[in-house]
Length: 88
Image (cartoon, rainbow, N blue to C red):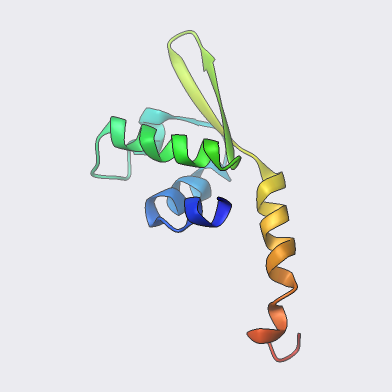
């Protein structure tokens, strides 16, 4: 599910932005020419994959990147490094 969530370039950009710190839906939507509901759908996919958590404070909903799933995906990919890196 992690790789499916990261297959979309918008979601990868959202993950990159969240690597800089927590952000609201509005903040995450700024660089894109898509609607807030569309960004929310992307966030839902990332949340279902376990890549982010979302919290609510008053009327603001903030998203936070979770490192553990990325670490797990990287560890899984490392076992295949020999296929693309001759130094292995």
